[in-house]
Image (cartoon, rainbow, N blue to C red; front, side, top):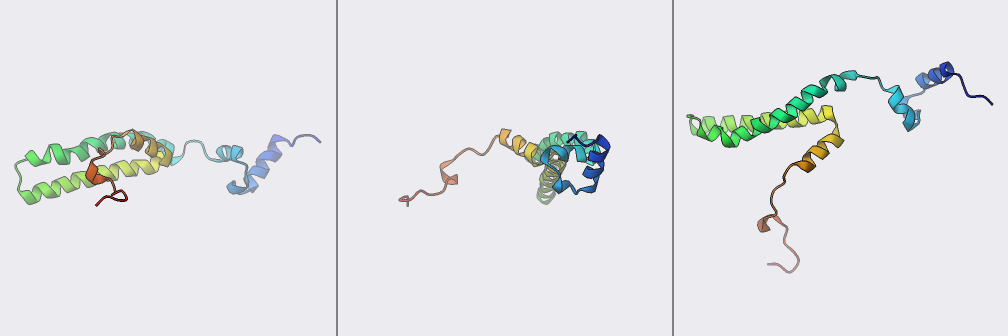
Length: 122
């Protein structure tokens, strides 16, 4: 039995839903480019810019000549904007890449009062 012609294979692939295709054929069925590829540079810029915007809430805002309520509102807006930029970029870049980025970020130190109580501790 001979192998099917490329035209027949293409017609069959277009007739089947993507879930019915083998995993090796899924990348061939997906369009090259697309909205994620076009937004990827903006998503990377959003990830990079989210850190200084988020950090400004703690480094810049407290020293501005504003009232306490205005400082609190501006700090909250900076934190919210940084988070929205970071996680919005995560939607475009994908969950696997965002997990790798988060794994490389420093985490909170393991202070004794952050850990759960062990059995036998009072």
